[in-house]
Each structure stands twice: as C-alpha cells, then as structure tokens.
Image (tube, rainbow, N blue to C red; front, side, top):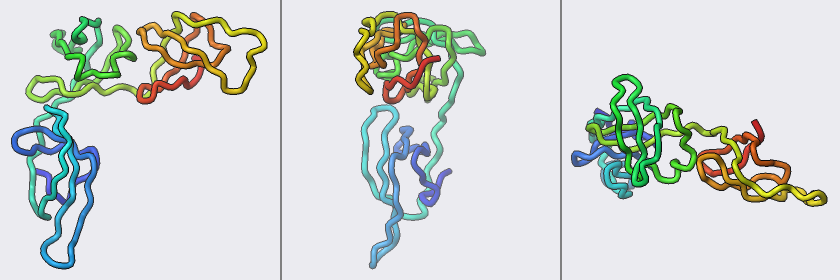
Length: 185
C-alpha cells in the first residue's frame, strides 16, 4: 500500500482497479479544513490524464506490474514482435504502445517491457542508441557554416538531422527521447 504522503513523480498506484502513474503531486494545506494532495496522474491502460485531489492519509494499492527483459525480433506492420528472454515465448506489442520509440528499435537488441496482467503497457528505451546511416546527401566542399545540418536516414528507417561531415555508412549516437544527433561512434 502506498499512502498519499509517499506520492512522488513516477510512482505507480492503482486507482479504481487500473494502474496509474503519478505525473505531478503537491501537498496543500488550506487555512480551514484538512490537508490534501493535489495530484495529476495518467491511467496506464487508457492513457487518460486526470487531475484529482486526495485527502491526506489515504492509501492506495500498488498495481501488479511486471517488467520483463525481451528481445526485439521484427516489425509486423501493426505491431512489433518481441521474445521473452527466459521463456522464449513471442509477444506482439501494438504500435500505439511503442509509439515513436519504434524508430529506434534495433533487431536482436534487448529492451525492458512493462506488463500489467500480461498486457504490454510500456517499452523502456535506453537514453541513446548507436545506429548506422544508410542514406544521406554528400557534404559539399565549402558548406562550412557553423551548425549546418542535413537529413540522414538510419538503418531503422528513422530520419534525423546530422552535421554535414556525416556520410553514408557512419555509425552515430542518437538521443531516443529527442531524436537529436549526439556524435559519431
């Protein structure tokens, strides 16, 4: 059980039988009446964001969330195929659960998948990934403007902006949250 005094950003609680993640919370003590916790949370099943106040001292159960290490196999079009590293069972994760992270998934790499009652809820990505540039325009001699960039297609199909000196075949490091080029590998 998790009391309202233990609320912090990122904590998982169960509200009305659904797993939720706390996005924001602050303790509030009005001049008259009891204290309460102003909370903003996201329902992990529906994605709905709710703002709600809870009286101090209330307790909430922790959801039965499981995090498993799984290996990414391939893209199925409407989903992504993963294999559990311990049982070798395959699981299809819908594209809406993976979201923009799908552009940075590398085949045969391991990722952490959050499950609730064997239903995939979220995919935990590393902060950076190393991917190879498969297509980009060649840099033109004389284009030496500081900070100039050009689009480059990576091995997973995602397009990022890279400096002019990056060529096809170069392995680069990319931030998975922002899609920014971080450097050559």
